[in-house]
Image (cartoon, rainbow, N blue to C red; front, side, top):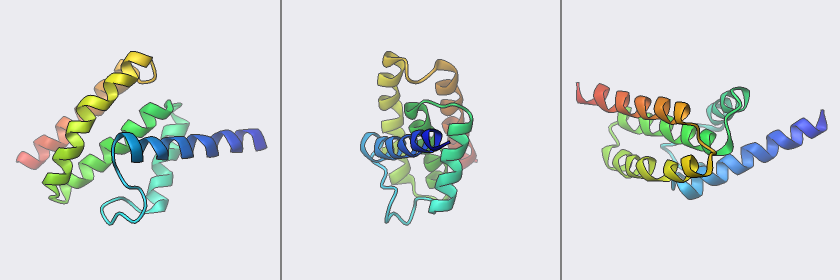
Length: 118
């Protein structure tokens, strides 16, 4: 049981590092980022769906992007959209992001953009 907890704790920490460093999203002291409870729910969902760390980081970034668009933070959303267009390429090349998940994340991003345009 403790091994699983240690693995999960490492997963959460590694995903958080990727979100901060690769997507340039501050997960602490950021008024635009969801609270810790919601963030942990998102990480739970990624863990339960057996996302890789790279997929989980993109999942977090994708949901954050949708939140920025919904809140009308278009400048921040556009900066993140540009990172979402480039960062996952490395995950695809390394085999740490599946094409199926990338396709789903990109569809979510497009949906957020379309909802905003309406």
